Length: 116
Image (cartoon, rainbow, N blue to C red):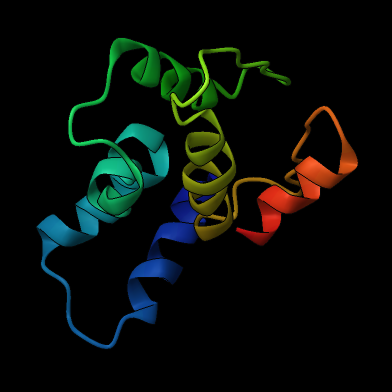
């Protein structure tokens, strides 16, 4: 059993209301796709219309065959939001990683991102 298969029932059972099979399937699928997690669970954190660059970043984050991913893009794209907020939330909710390490050019900037 994968971590996702183990985590999805735990997440589903934490809610007080009974969820439909569609909602249960959606929760399970969100654990496999940061793109879906972003648009369905955290829509207030992502643009309504994501660019191909946004989608490429999200696809890279979901490729668990990659041990490390470096993301570069223009200022204001939302790289920090996608990686340090949306992707981190998915990883925590589904217990998919042991460590999340924010990296920046200085300690102060990296630690400030965790405060927001």
